[in-house]
Image 1 (cartoon, helix red, strand yellow):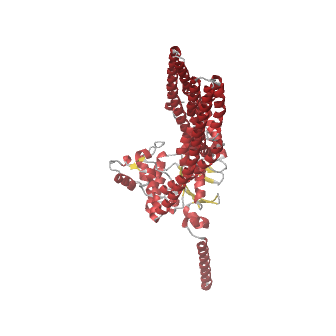
Image 2 (cartoon, rainbow, N blue to C red):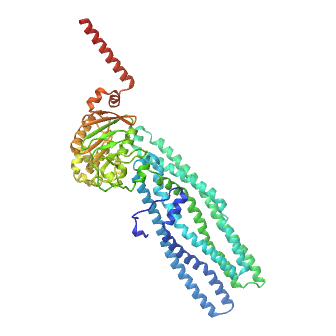
Image 3 (cartoon, rainbow, N blue to C red):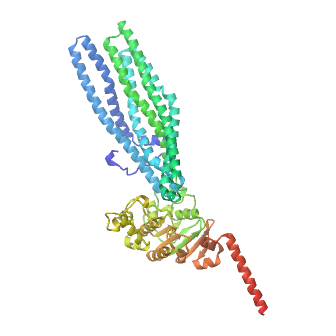
Length: 605
């Protein structure tokens, strides 16, 4: 895989059982790129490590006054220089390619997981953790996957050089062969503590990111109650905790770096001291001493990759653990086994039926659902769209189970608008450019959602947009009020014109006059289409073809709004917001009135 070939047509099915398993899965899926990086790394490191032998041969040729050997050595040095240049160039290219492609694969996996989980993702994983995984963690995972091949090339080069020194000059080569493993493995006792400190830093950074995202999301509310300073103080304390954790982690890594500098220096001193004694005794030549000294000096370069791989693994392990946790989440048992879908591409039509609650939404009619628990209403809305996060029987559309359909077909058939819809930044034209049947025009949808004042506000807020469709919407629509955002989201849903449209509290943030007009526009525009509205607003309920009351997870009453308001106390309690005491008092008053009327009749008789 090359960078120009991204994105992947299929990023694959990850091994998300643990962080190390996920890293190993990524490495295996890049085996071709890893082998290329290993080959170029070996060429580069071996060419660098061969320079000391060339220098030793050149020095000895000068001592022996041999022009032929000196010229031959010069040619070898030119060959090594060419190998260093070519190897380093292509090593960098393949390493960067491995890094970017690994990061891109992880990002595609996370994006696919987010689309499969839908709104369930934000309920099961903190927003700050999702942000941390999709930004900083992706880079750290790519860093480790890319560094493995370079580390392997460096380790093989060290083994080759040690073996070469032992054959070239056994007296000094044995010292180097014994000392280098000690130098390379001396930092291992420090790595667990450094890893723990890195984990603490990552955890605190994730919490700070989550706190920052929550503060930004609720900034308007915080300003309304004067609480922005309180949250800013909380973020300051969280950021200071991250700074302290980063300093403690950096101290450990600075100690590891110091060990990586100190021990090779001590080994070099030992080699030089022992080599001088051997040279004085005539057991080695000056050229051999220079060769061994230069080789030990050059070996510091590949040895630095031992420290890098330790750092890369320490930083990427918690990142891979978080990514694996997100990627291991499942919607439900049935939905997980039907992610790819086994049904036909045709979109079914007919009645929408939920066997768990007994809710039936007849085809082509406007059905209102009243549920006293808003959270239960949200979960039921997700079930109707095939996004259930809890185990249960599949919802049926025209007798066809949504879990048996492909994900694209299920989402084309049933569209669910959450009670807190998100507006993406961009122009209004881009916002409304969604997959649709083409039967509903943007102007009709905006009119049905009563967006005239929203269009005026967008034009006034844009300096260079005379057409409202070209007006820009800020991030998440923060420049608009809650009701304006809600109406734009409703217009976007109406344009799609799905077979079944499920709306969860679509008018909770608008005034009663606007709500009444929206109810009329919704009924008119969705005529002949199935629409399910979760609401407790009498204005919407009165315009529904039928109303279903859901109590403790089951449909307990079905009928017209006026019929239910008169005959079902539970329905009346939810719609009118009456408390149990008020209902009891109303019932008692009714009984007293009936008793007085009966007494009057008896007296008159």
